Every structure is written in structure tokens, then in C-alpha cells.
Length: 178
Image (cartoon, rainbow, N blue to C red; front, side, top):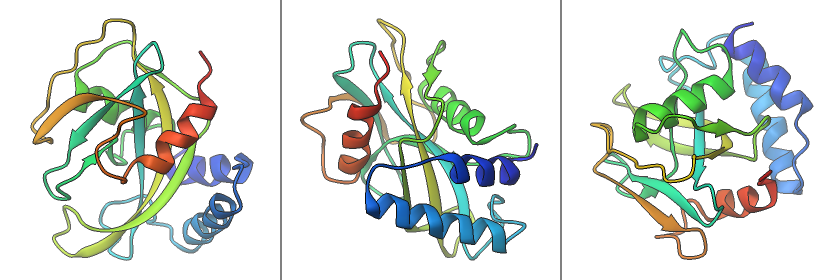
């Protein structure tokens, strides 16, 4: 199964708790069904991305990156790559690459979705249709900043910097399986 087929299956099966997320899920499905290239970063109309809210083993802190293009603290994540088996694998790969943490555990299904305008590697304005997962870091995990980040640090879930990840953090709180 390729990433697009997985994204279609994942979003068809996922049942978000809020009406806003359900409406957005339907929009994602329409975009995926309309565009064969919807998961490729070259799709200038927008493309599916995968991200992960990495939370510590105690469920109290989250690891955020200071995104160089956006200038805000965000969850880890990015573009789907040709070698990714599915959205979960893409989100887990991104979290591992951007944090250097091994032993991460990812939720079985998304916890949140979002679409936002961005100028990414295409160099032109586009949209990211972001499918977001919850990821648990092992106890004592030490993150190392990658070249993709201006900074990387743990933040208390109840004292996040800015509002960019607030809705995701709220969805993650109710999805914690540990």
C-alpha cells in the first residue's frame, strides 16, 4: 500500500470527536480522492504531511521544535517520502529524525488534523494537509536538535509557547494510552 492509499484508508476509518475535525476530515478525503499526487511535496496545490506530538513517558511535557521557516514552536513532522510505508511511518520517521530519540511509540490512529498555508521546499505558497499523531518518548529520553530546527526543547503541556499546538495538545491529552 502506498502513502496515498493508506491516507485514504486511515482518514475513512478515523472518527474525530469534534464537528470541526470531522468537517476537516471530509475535506482531506476530497483532496486525496481528487489528486493522485496529494502526498507528494511537488503537488503545488497542497500536499499531505505527517507530524507527531512527542510527549514524555509521564505525559506531562511535549517536545517542540522552533521551526526556521515558520518562526514558531511546533510539533515534529514534515513531508511524506517515497520510502514511507504509510502516514504513521512518515510521522514516526520525522519524529525520530528531528529528535534523535530511539524507542518512540506512536498512536494507532491520528489524534488531530490541520490544514495551514506555508511556503515549504517548493519555494511558493502552498498548503500542508497535516495528519497528526501522538508519540510517546521512552523514560529519560534526551533529544538532540537536528539541522531542520532552530531550537528543540521540552515544554509542559499546560504551559505551551504560543497557540500553534494548543488544539493538538488538547486532542493528545485525551488520546494518551499510557
